[in-house]
Structures are given as C-alpha cells and as structure tokens.
Length: 183
Image 1 (cartoon, rainbow, N blue to C red):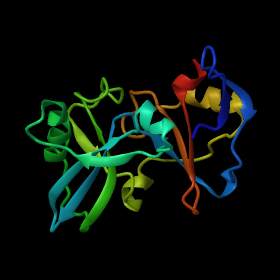
Image 2: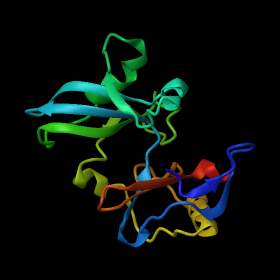
Image 3: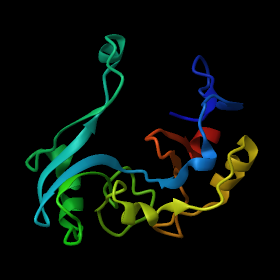
C-alpha cells in the first residue's frame, strides 16, 4: 500500500495527505527493487521450484479477491525465460532450505533499471540479504521523501537511481512509496 493519498479519478498523482496508520519509528526501511516478484523453494542448496506472482484480474477484484498469489513458472515458457536465467546466475549455496520470496532483477527484466550486467535473484525475505538493501535515516514527510527519492542511488548499484522505499513493521505490515509516484 502506498503511504500518500492518490487522485485515482484523474491524473493518479499523489498528494501530501498521509493515508496510512503506520508506525514508521518501529519499521525498517528498505530499497524497493524493480524486478519480477518470485518465490523459490530450495532443498540442499538446489532450487527445486520457481514460482511467479500473479495479481488478481479486475473481475477477480470485483469478486473480492484482492491479494496476489504465486503460480509455477515454467522453464519451457518464453515468458519465464529470464526468471530461470536469474536463478541460474545466483549462488544459493549459503541459503537454507525453504520457500523464499525474492525479486528476479537484471539486464532482461523490467528494462533493467538497476543497470545490472546479468540477471539474478535477490532474496529480500532473508534477513542477511535484506540488510544489504536496508536504508538509514529515511524521512517520512512528503517533501523530504520526494527529495530523498530524487537524490538516492540504489544500494545494489550506485550508478542507478532507487525505485522506491518499503517500510517493514515487526508485526508484518508493509507500506511503500515509489520515485515515480512523485512524477
């Protein structure tokens, strides 16, 4: 959920009205990565399942389905080709067995906004990996966030701009804002 009110009827621009009841002081701010949300299942350091996120269609939303879910990605499907390339290019040897939410990022994914040389997986659900994209001293008021997002560079590539910020509260709640929300 975005943190500021948005004009949904016309230009979709945000305004300074904060619309979330969220405790920013207790939350951890991380860089929002612009890629493809996936989930991988590991067993003994080997990826045994790759899934991609599906968002509900307009019809499903009208029927009360509002949360996304995961479906299996298929290596033979050309739409999933770069997801599997990202998996092949990532070292999972230090990752314990389990299901991990992640982001497939890189040169063939979402226009490569991070300007990476190859496709790879970033497991944002792993505490050690999440620490690599944790932001310090992030403002929470409208004008300060706007300025911060214009100036801030990615923690994964200092030559690329940051896409946005995601705040993670210990109770599981998350809120976000993107740089493009201000344009």
